[in-house]
Image 1 (cartoon, rainbow, N blue to C red):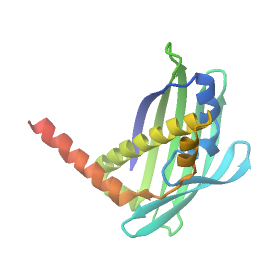
Image 2 (cartoon, helix red, strand yellow):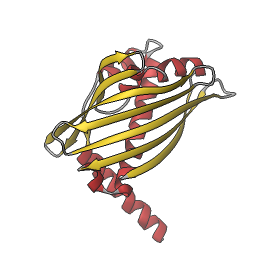
Image 3 (cartoon, helix red, strand yellow):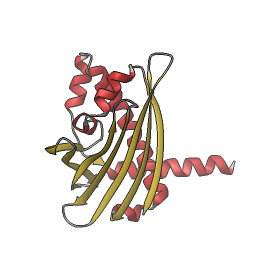
Length: 190
């Protein structure tokens, strides 16, 4: 199953500070629930893992993230990520482009365009649920991204939050996503 997801959010930090963070996959991985960089292969390739909790069990995905294009002058990054369930029950790949734009307020607009392909057990959830799950995860990512940027300024509470890595709770996200879908349907039926 293939999906295209586009997101935009703003942070109250200058573009150069946001770029320094966004262009470092090790830092960005700390913002993704359940994800971590486990090894740096070279200056553009990283090995990583993500944990997804489904009910009482935790499923591990191992993969690789590669920086395809890094345009410091225009504040654009393109990455390719691929992962495989360690038990062989599925895989996922993502091509993501991130772009930054300085705002008149002194803050930064962050724009992300992702093409995601999911195969196996996660694909069985269906595109509407996966899209809603990605919306919830993006909300968590945005919150974590802003906290870590603030932590880069020395805020102790934000730095403590940055140290916490817990698996994604897929059952909980799927439930939230399903509720969101029904809420959206009932509002459009009114």
